[in-house]
Amino acid sequence: MSEEEIPEQGNRDMIASIEDALTSALESNDLQRAAKRARQLAELRCGSRWYPRRPPRLRHSLPIEAPVDITAAKLRHDSLQFKYLQYRGVLGKEFSPVIEEYEALVEEIAAQGITRVPYDPGRHSRIKHVYNRIIHIRETPRVINALSSEWDSAQVESQYHEHAPGLVVIDNFLSREALEGLRLFCLESTVWSSTRYAHGRLGAFFWNGFNCPLLIQIAEELRQRLPRLLHNLYPLQQLWGFKCEPELPADSTNHADFAAVNVNFWLTPDDANRDTSSGGMVVYDVEAPLSWDFYTYNGNDHVIKPFLHQQEARGTVIPYRQNRAIIFNSDLFHATDAVRFHSGYENRRINVTLLYGDRCDDTQHRDIRTEAPEIHQTTTLPAWKSAVWHWGNLSRFRG
Image 1 (cartoon, rainbow, N blue to C red):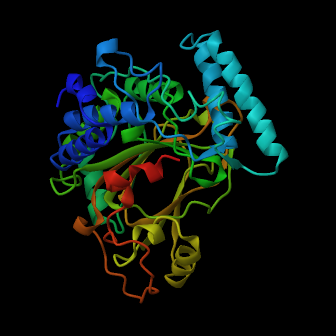
Image 2: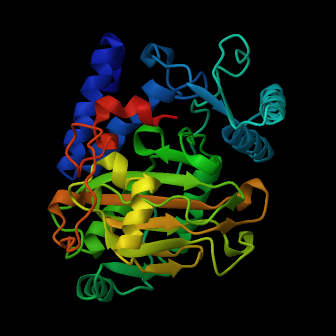
């Protein structure tokens, strides 16, 4: 299916076809093809009059759904990002009225003592053409080497396999060129569209525009550098980024992920962090039981916290450092540590995550020897398979 053929298909069939192709590409480790399909999906779901840029004959009718909610956190982030892009000459003065409308809506929502309001086509008509849509994606090409040569691959693999429960910390993870390129991609690209998270956290996902040649290069080089850890059983499942507001309380994001191996790394400079002992991650030495479904192990604190207490879980605190990566068993419960960063758009904490393999294929998974609480299954999906992975359900994760 070529891009020229896209306008000739019905929107629903077109999206389903792209989703199937994306799934197939990821399963076969063809990340170049997966990136192309993810870009096409982002154009359809999140495009705007500014993106994608292509000749009129190749433009298609964009079946963009109106947002469910308008959140103060996203309005604050986006108004700062638009100002940043104006400063860098990416956007012009035509965005000043949008910024003013965003800031007025933030004040209106704050006056009600809430954090989000339902989308109202009448009240919010002035931002409908930009809210949760892609305005700009920074061109971020591949570099000579994405991963730094300052860490030893064999040592990382040995530490992961020989020291239960599977946790390695790597400093100077990316090359300096890759670190700067990816940080600018995250600052400039208007892809932070997932607003369903508490405390103002914003997510950016592969299928909604968090996608550039440099990200794909990092994913490919990781498989090359860590063949014993990210072997053929563990294809790339997903990649995403998160941004935090300046403050995030500790112990508020406990969860496990649906993959076998989690690679998480941080991009924001250290001088943005007001507390150098914190701002990073806490990884517990307890895994999510394989019988639990995604909606339980991925964030049900009413079940997770008592279970961690029952298991006498011990947490390893990894303080925040720019260009520090944590590679760990994705079944392990983990959480963002307390965040206390300086205000200002460029100071926002940014983390990037790559997930490899399915938890059902995880050769490192240990049996839970203490009886786990019985969990009512809230979905018919297998316990190890997140609904994020089922592309037909993507709309529920768009914010």
